Length: 416
Length: 84
Ligand SMILES: Cc1cc2nc3c(=O)[nH]c(=O)nc-3n(C[C@H](O)[C@H](O)[C@H](O)COP(=O)(O)OP(=O)(O)OC[C@H]3O[C@@H](n4cnc5c(N)ncnc54)[C@H](O)[C@@H]3O)c2cc1C
Image 1 (cartoon, chains in turn brown, cyan):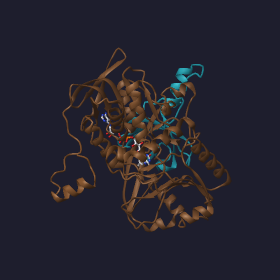
Image 2 (spheres, chains in turn brown, green):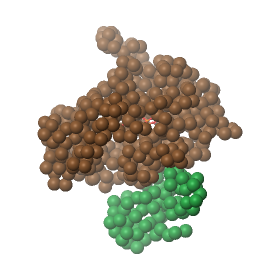
Image 3 (tube, chains in turn green, orange):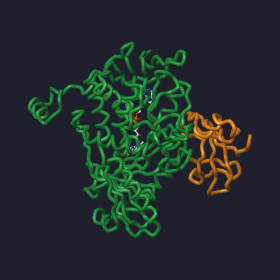
Image 4 (cartoon, helix red, strand yellow):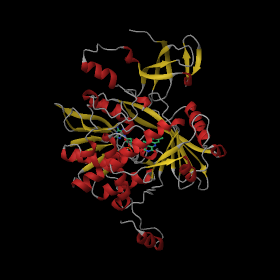
């Protein structure tokens, strides 16, 4: 069924009885052309673009839980393309362009809201760094504006400009950045892929890879053996434990990142604001909740929940930046698994095992990457060649020295 | 998380900074490029028991090797770190 104003009106008159399931619940076939492991945003987008761009439709997406139960439904929904390094910026700008056309493409309202994102700075040196980043963005076809303190005050008069430790001197603004309703991204891609013939199989955990003579021919699952010529893994925070089943050690550690939502409030926050110095970022959802978070907890974890010191630290950051936040009550908090890579950048690459492909290392920033990650992983799976904007995302880059370290933090996964 | 320091007794984890897998104590010879690459960049990253290095930065500045379950955050063993 095509979703439109007409389908809503028509269903309204019929009492909504004609709505059909957005995607099927198929029994897995014995074999497919390709298997995608992981039904998060990246896995579903990969399947959708394989079907829509490359005409490969005999595909299964295998998800151990339910669609949208992983990070794609746990993140704070920020999209942006404000990266500095050439290996990254072209990729994230492609992603932002794909977000801009996504809803028409998949016929699903994902509430893409380009409300703008502000990165605050507090000193002359930080302003120079912001200007350099902005120039890099513009050179890659993205948009960027440097705001001084007066211009920032016009946009956000409620910020604590005269903080003694980190006074606000201005911000780098990307107007095309913003937020997207995360669950709708999972559902929209799932429905889009399903309509093109992709089998989305939930409650189907991949327990092992079938590997013979260095060649992967399929997977073992909780629903039995499923064969395929190519297997693409996109399991985000579970990358370490899943790829270990294929005998691979990765340049990745799994960490926990927490997020918080306040009770619903009247509109007070027009943009997304990131306050790096205070380890804090915030936006306001369309329902009115303040959605905010900070840094990862910092220790290896597969627990999908964090500890209290970080809760205190994040809320302190919020109070330092916008003291009015102290009046809001916290409604919900949760944690998700971060596949933190050794240079803070992702991987979209072949593995040493023929037929086995890997997509991961997204750290805390993979939601914005969802469309381009699917686009480029589909390209790799279909053509066996890296997409032009994802060429730097190689698994062997630490051996060759071609690391993409935006923060310059070195091989310390919890500092990226 | 509460870390039961072998010398100081129970301390809050926020007094510590985290380095990572305790196998980092076993630094290979830097002439062996492949082994050195693996040492610096690759991790076992297990789901379950993990031996890991914590530094008591806001305390006695000792290095500890802690055995902790990454699936539950339960700490089962705390020792002073030693070169092996
Ligand atoms: C609190 C929080 C805030 C964040 N905020 C942002 C943000 O504002 N902006 C941004 O860009 N990014 C953000 N991120 C990061 C982003 O959410 C992730 O990088 C991204 O969602 C990861 O890709 P995914 O959607 O494919 O992951 P997931 O949705 O986690 O998908 C992976 C799937 O693989 C499945 N799986 C695992 N093991 C198996 C198995 N053995 N067999 C079958 N299936 C398996 C899992 O169940 C899961 O559904 C945030 C993350 C968190 C946790």
